[in-house]
Structures are given as structure tokens and as C-alpha cells.
Image 1: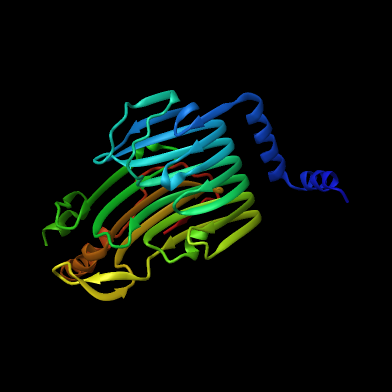
Image 2: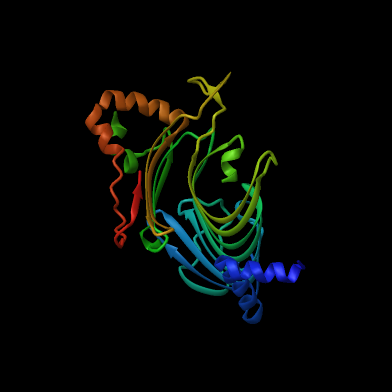
Length: 182
Length: 131
């Protein structure tokens, strides 16, 4: 059985594989490329309560060099980066096209949805995927951190994102409430 | 998830859905996965070997599981994450918080770790919540 017959048989069986191939071909037909939020990419910056949320949308080839999210995507990619407002250089809110400002600070949370082919070389994992993949890292706190934090996030409603964080010893009334004074 | 196969140096809470083919290894190259089809994971990864410090902040030479208090609530809509809420205390702060909660009593502690869904997300029938 030659390779062509094997591929055709696989495409007939796998809807996910067909979707991925369609996404890749569509991306090639009508898209461009982007690197770290610059290029064929659109994005929206939202100033939420204690957080800056940046959503990016790319179709085509997208390369990323952020340590926590490094990799290459061929297809459709939608990513949501949540930064602590107290630490982030706050970019201008609203829609941005061809250049989406991404603060350099590490994210509080990160969500990535990909339809197509993705190769990942981040600080968390190395891998390849074909098809649909969604990964949301909601918490990533260093093992030796001593801190208090409250976080609320809804991917479909980024304006409602809420983030507060304090090191132990700092005022934490926002999170601890009446327990803070004990 | 490959995150779960390594000796963690961070506390992770993550949600992962794959439809298709996914191959991955952790950054230490000690474990990997190959998936063909559908997979969905919810993972909380707690570091198991954290250097302990005394009250002055000096290392004691001992290692133990990371100290943490956490209340998390995750809502899904089909295969998609729709909302997440968390209160988290880690490390030395968690040890001190344990003393505070001990004095505060059960009711105040329970209130602190209640996770009401303050982000109202419309959920069609058949949705699932996780706490």
C-alpha cells in the first residue's frame, strides 16, 4: 500500500485531520506571517481590574519567541495573555492590527488555541501538534514563592478579568479581608 | 500532560484539550506523550521538593512539599474553558496563614475559601463545574 493511499484513507477516517489540512491550506491561500505580534496579526488590548489582557489572532505562519510560549504555528492561532497590571507596561487599550503590543513581563495566565500545525519549544514543553489544541495555563507560581493571590478569568469575557497579588508582609486587605488584621 | 511528568519547580494549574495528533516531551527529556484522537486534561501540579527555610529565611537543608492553600473553581462549556476563579496562598505565607486561620475559626476560614462564580457565564444545559 503506497503512501498516497494511506494518506487518503487517513483523511477519510479522521475529521480532525481533514480540518487541520483545510486550515493549513486556507492559511497558505490567504494569509501571511507574524513574529511576536508583528505582521499578519490582529489583537485587542483590554485593561481589566488589576490585569492587562492581550488577545492576538493570527492566520498563516506565526512565530513566537517568548520563553513561556515559544514556537511556530501554521494555521489559525488565537492567544490570550494575562499580565498583572501593577507590573506590565500598559499598552494602549483597543484593537491593534499588524502590530500587537505585548508586555515583556511573564504572564499571570496564558491561553492558546490552535487549528493547524504547531511546533512548541517553550520553557514548559517541547512538542508538535496537528489538528485542534487548546491549552490554558491558569497558575504558574514558583516553588519558593511566598505570596497571596486572587484571580478570576473568563476567556469569553476578558473585561471581567480580576487579579490581585501580594507578597507576605505587604498589605493584603484586598484579598484577605478581615483575616488580614489577625 | 507532559507538565505532570517532570519534577516541578512551579505550582501549575492547567487545562489542555487536543483533537488530532499531539506529541510532546518535558523540558528535561525524561518523559513524553503521543496522542492520536481526543484527550482532555485538568491538572494541578504541586512541587514536591522545595527547600525549606526557617523563620529568619535561612535554608534549613531540608526539603518538603510546597506549602499552599488554594480554592479553585473551573467552569467549562463543552470542551472549552468558560470561567476560572482562584484564591491561592503559597510558601511561608501559607504557613503563617495556617496559624491565622486556626485563630480565626472555621466559619471565617470557610468564607475565605468559598469560590462563588462571580463571573456570570451563560451555560447551556449539560455544562460541568469543577472545584
